[in-house]
Amino acid sequence: MILESVILIVALISRLSNFRPMRRRLKMSNPNEYLMLAFGFMVVIMWVMIAATASYYSIVEERDISDSQLTVIGLLGGPALLIITSVLDLFKSKEGAKINILPDQLSSDVASAEAVEGHSRMLEEMKLKHDLDMEKMQKQHSLDMEAFQITNGKKGAKKGE
Image (cartoon, rainbow, N blue to C red; front, side, top):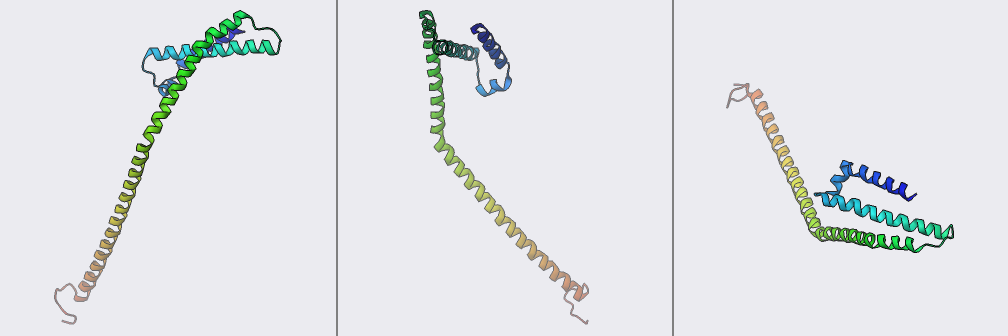
């Protein structure tokens, strides 16, 4: 049972190492990070599996846990707990960095929103000014055309001359 689980885990790790999007998400830059991921994952999974199997046989089958089983659980448990602790510390430091960046990010978001709002306001103001200028020019053109039609194209001429 344990051998089958180890084979399954090794196959899973080999498939995960070939999965491209996961590599991009983890942002691993050197082979040591891949080695630590594979080794750490395997140590933690083996520790959990052996401890769970021993607990199952102890509780359900009512067998005693042997000293050799306790030794293996203890030997795997030390590195597994160190790996788990380092992963949690890494998570904690990344979250701390995100929290430290948050005030700057919020202030830049506020500044960006204000800039967009000011730009939109300026565009609306320019559009209104343009529309007013276009309407003024259109009315002036209509007046000029009406004057042209009334005077039959003669400048300064009065009606009836």
